[in-house]
Image 1: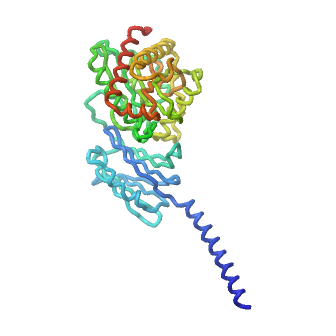
Image 2: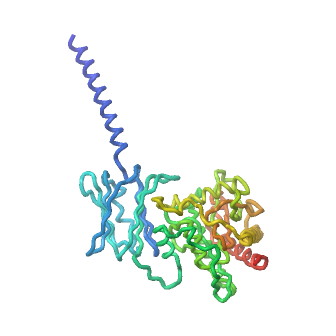
Image 3: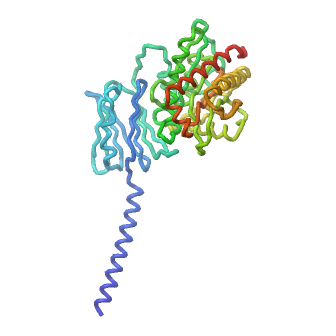
Length: 408
């Protein structure tokens, strides 16, 4: 009976082959790295390249001259269409990158060549998956020396941060205040930026974009005030660690620090403006606690290396001055009282929680949630120049009221 035997044997062989193929496919899939996304974030301070992949990438780096090039060899990787198109992401105005080239160096290695416009100090590190991001290899390109026409301390602060020198214990609680003609010094902090988009609305509005626009409008209003001077923590689409934002305010000897955001919630019905101050003893509500937790994750989402750095667990400077605490609450209350003229208030009282970005010990600090970007109507308003100007004017009026009420 040869036919039945041959048929049975063929089925058995097919079954074994299929099992082997399935086994090999599963193992191969688990072991093979794939580039899922490539992003480039240019700015005047530094340029960031992010390679997102399904597994953690292993790499080697070296530097070549004539012309200056940073070369990165990525192990166990095959070139795909996503990675191959990286050269199209470079903008002519990028101050650091002249050209990007990528190729399959050998069967198991992809080589990325970054041709440079100037000498740079590269900082490479990997990040584990968080939020919607997979594994990331981050390539930060800093200039060896920063030539600036102003006194912005950002570059120096980032240098200290990357070296691990921006340590809590090295910074005194009180510093001699240097005033510019006795003006009130205000630092505005547009939240998120760069790799960290913040909340994203139904119509794809990004929090990082609208809060930068509001901060710029508020800055322009403050510049017209003879008794005030103003600075921004960022004026570009750039990622800044929370600690650097705090220390930039202190470097300017700020009297006020206002972090500007656009809230989001799982229910689109949530709406209104809010103000928050720092609490070191627990949040005033579960919602405030949740918001602080999500905002404090900005470092991990935006991309901060956790390779042994001492300052990345948000155990920042304690707010020890009673006057600073009281003034922060007064500032938040006065801003809320003005914002209710232009938008519904989500909470009528200033809420408190452990926001890392509010932890300057000697600067009255508040976080303003301008509106809910997750609410369809408020998202539409946030995109308009009219509403942005109204919010900016309300915050300025709140600042003016605060100045007459603050405790010295």
